[in-house]
Length: 130
Image (tube, rainbow, N blue to C red):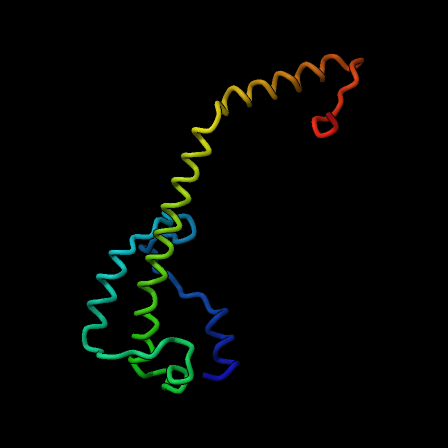
């Protein structure tokens, strides 16, 4: 693949049919197991695959099914990594949510801002200067 071909592929967006999902607003949860099962069904006929990006992979023709299969094989690991990161983000958000009464903090800050908006004669000292 030449540099021009690579650039054209990178900037070309596939056309979606009218009955396809809107991938920009669809759920972004990654089901790594579904990806692994799908990839496995495609990869069963290959004994060994080069690692994508290596010289042996790059030397393959762009039409060689081994080249595409190598990329699909790596997609399994990306999906697993993405799924693990999503799980960690969920756990972290739950921990942050449970760390304080965020509703009470919001109400306090709103009430404080309202107070100082009404009492213009009071000089407010910014929190970071206290």
